[in-house]
Amino acid sequence: MFDFSFLPELIIPNLAVNNKEEAITYLSKLLEDSRLVERNYKNDVLSREKEFSTGLPVKNGAIAIPHAKSTHVFNNGVAVGTLKKSVYFNSMEDSNLEIPVDMVMLLAISESDKQLKMLQAIMRLLSNEEIIDTLKNKKGSKDIAKQFTKLI
Image 1 (spheres, rainbow, N blue to C red):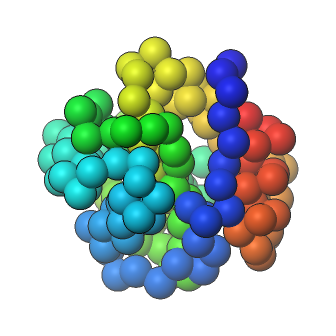
Image 2 (cartoon, helix red, strand yellow; image 1 turned 135 degrees about the vertical axis):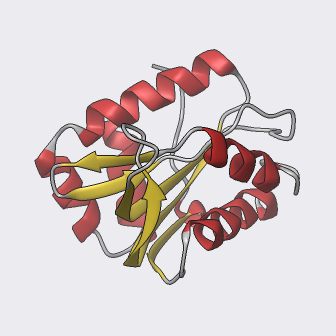
């Protein structure tokens, strides 16, 4: 694919948020603090989420992959939150349907072709029930980062 590593400082196990906006805001702040995106990136993602839903049902629950094509991305990164309790995102398959999501992967990829490749890699990953269970059961950010990097 392309040279990419998931960073432990961008992965939060058991993230406590009340809704998708809080999840996106929290994960955007991680990307911002790591100097991967500008502050306005969050607004780009929230706007895109209103137009194109990113909740995706998987075999053992659901995951959301919010992202945006944005000039506010400096460098590639993915912030991940495994949620303490599920929050609702509209489904990618049916935007009128809200689904409970228990993992959010906020993509900040500067180039469209790399963003598409990352989305495709994540979709392949998420089609494997065993991989999803393994990722959800990892407790520490270093373990999750290592597992994601190995699988991507």
